[in-house]
Amino acid sequence: MIINIEQLNKQPLLILSVCFILGILLQDQLPLDKMMIYMVSAGCFVIFILYFLNSYFLHKAKAILLGLMFFGAGIILHFFNTFSSGNLSVPQNAAVFFKISKKLNSTEKNKKYEAVIRAGKEYFNAILYIPKTNKELDFGHYYKADAYVSKTKSPQYTFQFDYAKYLKRKNIEYQCYISSNILSAERTDLNLNERIQQRRIEILQKIDNVEMSSKTREFLKGIILADRTEMDSGTVEDFNRSGMVHLLAISGTHIVVIFGMFYFLLTRFSPLRLRKYAVISSISFIWLFAAFIGFGNSVMRSCIMLTVYFVYVLLQRKPDLLHSLSLSVMIILVADTQQLFDVGFQLSFLAVLGIFWLNQPLLKYFPRQEGYFKKLIINTITISISAQLATLPLVLYYFHQFSLVSVPANILIVPFSEILIVFSFFMTLLIGLKIDFTWINFVYDESIRILLNLIHWFSERDMLFYSNIAMNIAEVISLSLIVYALRPLLLNINFKNLIRIVAMVMVFCMIRIGFNIFENQKEEIVFHDFNKAKVISVKKGSKACFWIGENSDKKKILKFIAGPYCSSRRIRIMEIKTFPQTAEKVVYDGKIYDLK
Image 1 (spheres, rainbow, N blue to C red):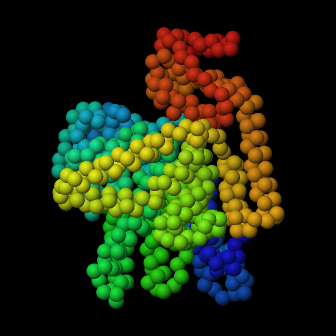
Image 2 (cartoon, rainbow, N blue to C red):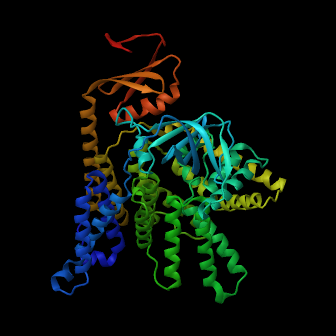
Image 3 (cartoon, rainbow, N blue to C red):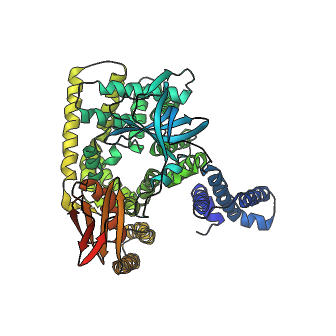
């Protein structure tokens, strides 16, 4: 990207954010050592000094120098934010003392937490596993137990999700398994954040005791308190397949609705001259709410953007979406550069960029928006299409699946999301205050039952759901350029813009066909270890056969082994065969393969 003064005057924060991000990416992929970091720091300091000197040459080069300084700042901050393994002497079996720092999604057998652990004289962060039969842990206690401690390991093959790398970005490299009794002692040294999180856990526990169906309770905890840790896998799968998972993730819609609810109440009970204080009070409340639910990426982005927007309004200046978006990116990444590699962070900001880039051009092709309901429906359609088009390349790259049913599902359900969020917030408030209205619980329970059944119906439209879609970085970039070029075409459908899009689509198809041909020429045999099971995959061209033990968990193997392998190797035809547990060899296509 060429940076000049004119561009910098139009969108300085956006350009500087891009420079900062490029610095983070460079340091992550080609890490510089400490000496080089000192040199980059010195260069940034020199640029900072030069920026304030008066010179014709420096005046012309200020935009470039400023971009280089932010590029260097990205390198420096990411160097200090990168976790380096310490030489810890942690025994595999040890008595550990710990406190929890975050609750994670439970597995079939265990509850999971992020915890700060002391084993002997060593302190370290770890993922903690305890049986589901054990009592829920909280922030108000220290704990002691006998545990098995192990370092996380990278997967066998590159097509598998690298959980060890993911944890390392969170400064975690150990997993701790506890199966024995856990002793506890009450804490007296809780900091402010831990007190807030403890209060959140208490409200979550109150929700668990309300007389509603378990799915309704888990939905309520997810949509308001950002807790999906105990939601059953079937419900999560329904939301994923229907493209409605954003309803559970606390995002811009939730923050705007909650802000609007409090702003409405405050303005109805305050004189006109105090309206600005109603804005300030409402902004303060959404930040308190964000702190209460744990400052997730989408929450932070939404709160910062909303705050910046209303600061512009209070200062009587024209709000700018890209300035707000860029500022929120900078604030989050300065606090923690590792957030750049979080999938939720990337999709959250891309969705907003997509809405900014495509929503207004799409509105041109719909009838004039007269009336609130008509405006709501049309905006829901265009915003859903814009966000999904913008995030499509990354969704295919990370998840290798896409559902065409997500557009009609969003169009039908999202218009009622405001009512749903307000109702859920009201229910949480009543439960937190221990106010029990049986009929309100019944109405809410039935409403959510209907919603979940509707989402389940959408998720079962298998003809509109595509999985195991291969996508690499080159294809992501090519597809993203097509999405970028849609705006000029939508604004002005002419021969030049149409030819540009057609050429880009042809380039994308050629890139994709080229990678398909290259991959389909390969043949390989791969031995996979999945828990204690052995899996063999035999690939010939675009076909693959998976051999699994007759008592193996086929569903999990499809999800964690076969699916990722097929999308990575661009497999079109897949079959699964079983062998007895006592088998020592497998015969496939006239060849013999050893299992030992």
